[in-house]
Image (cartoon, one colour):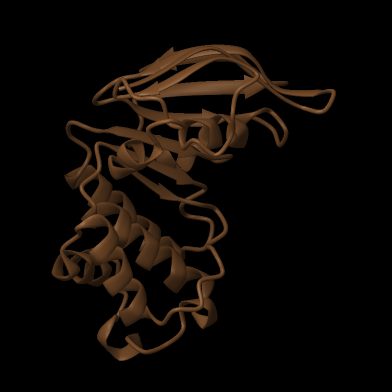
Length: 212
């Protein structure tokens, strides 16, 4: 579903990705690990079409994420480590998401409820002013409601308390079939029971790729 071939990305003289090749297939659940600066974020942003490679290719379901970005992003849910500074309130945000991606609003509310996020009481609060945990729960609910074939989480539990983490893992267990799940994480123990593959990057290269 995702094919990365000899991918190199430079920023000035710094090589962020150094001839990286790997494949992520349906039913892969991957922990992408490595120190800060290892190239993890650059790899994710290349998959999302944010970066143009200096050489090599990225294909998502056979499509180029730069030239076919709209089609590619239709099949990807992405939850960043730092929630974006959205000024819309929750109701406006859900309306925007539903109109732009054809998501069922009730499904967002369902997953939010499963994450113990009381949407109705906070419907007219600005997303920007929500707590970190509330932002993360809403973004996770939207990512699951989208029913994407590829879901990418960048440190998804960073703002969640232990109970919310448990709720998150249970939801993923129910929704992991026929997907690529990609976790960018520094804490393998938190996603150990969800992943069947661990990729470790260092200095822009994939240094290990293990399946369980």
